[in-house]
Image (cartoon, rainbow, N blue to C red; front, side, top):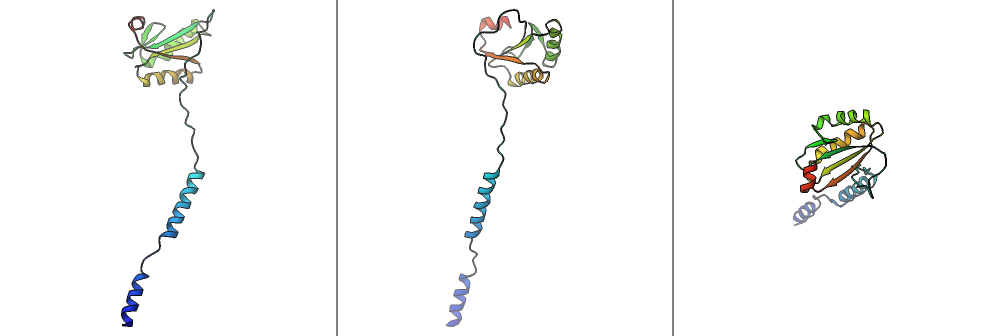
Length: 141
């Protein structure tokens, strides 16, 4: 009889208590959450200008992307790779010109970002505006 009792009591001791291990895991989880570095991802500033466009004698170079993703610089259709060169060509004649960048709401975002990045890489500031294409704006572009 005593043998049976010892066997039963030995089988109860065979399990491992997981509570301390769970405590350590939660403490480590809290530690890593608190000490993690939260990155501030910098987005693209596409805020639209408030008020009217500057008037006066300031010259402007306009870049437009229509709803068919055709890119024009000062009314001349150019490829995406040639936008920077075309702007540079116009800056020879208008050295202090501001750059107005208009894109249709349904234009490819990739093209918009590429042009904006190219202009910023060249040290130019760009005034950005989106528009909803209508029949009259489609004819102008």
